[in-house]
Amino acid sequence: MKTKREQIDEWASEAFPEDEILFADGFEDAFLGVAMQFNNPIALFDYNKCLTILQKDGMNYNEAEEYMQYNVVGAYVGKNTPAFLLKFKNYETSRNTND
Image (cartoon, rainbow, N blue to C red; front, side, top):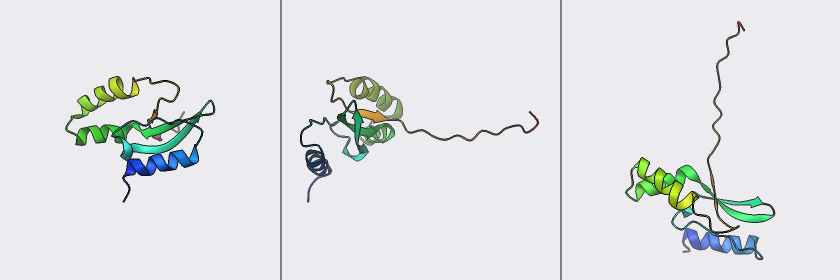
């Protein structure tokens, strides 16, 4: 049985045979797919799932957040640098009907 990383690599090479897509090692469970930026495909990861992965590896939340900011999100490796998605949460606001 193939590992998740092997499955991702196989899919990416079939879907984007002409492009080099860089992946953040160790975050396969947070992989969402590929985003397009200026016609350049880049790997897209769920930021919060990455934090969860780091916490499972023994970091507390603050350590995981700092590690993500400085060592992962802040690591520019060229035009193929992966992206990390912070999901939008739709907060409903209560409105005063007397306004």
